[in-house]
Image 1: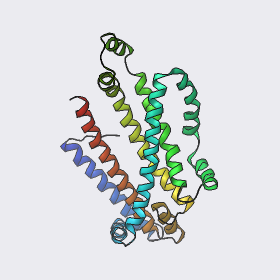
Image 2: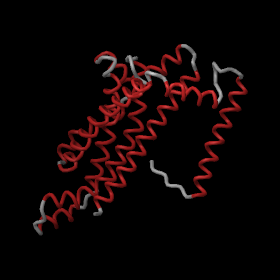
Image 3: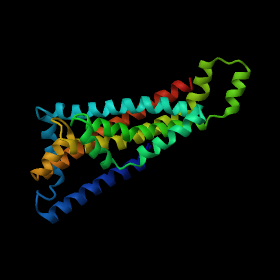
Image 4: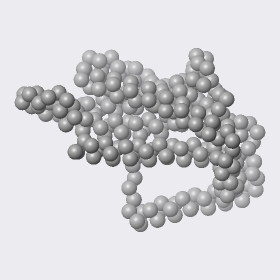
Length: 253
């Protein structure tokens, strides 16, 4: 979800963040135990220590790599099959039940089956793939439905080249739907991948470290890894917004 704030709204957003930190600090003082809820400053220090640790790049990088692999496969399949389904009503009827099953199946059910079928390193990728694919595909299918058939017929009547039709008719119509699907897929898929790591416990992964921290009651480390995961997710969404703006400029060129 994109949000553009003016100057006043940015101050309101900053005040909202400060309020969250104040509430967090008050709850920490109420519980009076770092084993239940450490304070914000202690957690921020822990985040810094984790980032500076020797194996941080291996841990975070492996999770990012799994996310990129799952996302790449989901994007290629989702966009390709979504376009095909948009052009063929018969294929759309065939594909829809699969998408409904993938989208409706609980993530935990997929994770438990994946634990039986795959190695610990492959489980998060599989979960991320099945979580992200239907979101991308269904958005592309909706985008294809939004294309005005009369525009395509008119372009073909005037013998406009197929490449130009794709660029000036189909691409502008489905581009917003593709980015909407990708944005939703990244948010949900990123969480699903970390859940997969928590359950499968590969050697490296943010989810693995979160589970280890929970096992030994290192709540500060658990929250710190959660903050790192949120920051990484925000970074990917920011890159996606930049890519979307550049794509829009290219389409309107």
